[in-house]
Image (cartoon, rainbow, N blue to C red; front, side, top):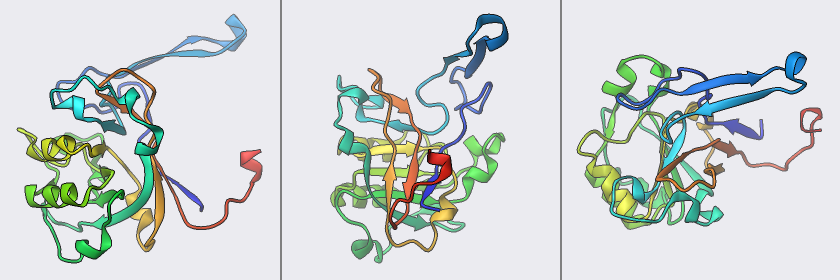
Length: 215
């Protein structure tokens, strides 16, 4: 495969962070009756796979639509956290992670997506590791869980204060194991908001080949 989908599917009554509004996806028009199909979507910007920008938790008027497109694509680096409950800095990160990287942390938490424990019993990233990412000036941090931390969200604030986006509710990160290099793309809607739903995916090394599915 040349591409790996890293996104959760948007669907009616999909899992949302406790306290957030539920997702509504309604088919409003039917081809047989109305001569066309159409759906209506109502969702918060933090449902499913999404990106937080600094405005989410910091005093800022800059919405996610105001950031350049190149902010949301870049070289990917996978960190396999195994069964760690607190994901901390490792010496190997000094040479592995570079300025402008999109760092994806594999925890396996996405296996519990849709269950109650998904939001209440996930690993966290230490402030030490967050400060390392900030010093390295990575482009984005992505996780296969609802958040890299818990209230009062110190890790969020460390990263967002340095202009580092946070990509949450990823899936399929295990399929990136064994790849030293790949691209990550997670472009938000051009929406005046503090976050956005995204279709995140990884592009693996190799020449793009046209397939029947692509037309």
